Amino acid sequence: MTIDQLRHALDNSLPVGICAEDCTVAAFGRAVTDHAVFAYRRDVVTLPTRRPALPPRGRHGGFSDHKRGKPAAALPRALLRMPQARLR
Image (cartoon, rainbow, N blue to C red; front, side, top):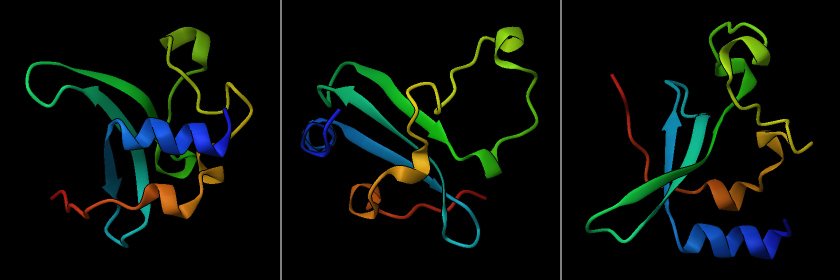
């Protein structure tokens, strides 16, 4: 995926981010939606330092953000801009 393709995908999606108490990004994802009836969860990434301890992939069936060889930290900062939300 090129950076232009990623920008286009985010422009046509609803980006969602979770910030840690220190205002750093802990997780990022996007929903492909018509903003009325449906939404599909896509590209959900949790930074490795924010993940709970999980068994190896084969035992829990989870998806690794490193599967395609590009960790979440490689996303440009401009693509992670989103309204800040605090979860308590």
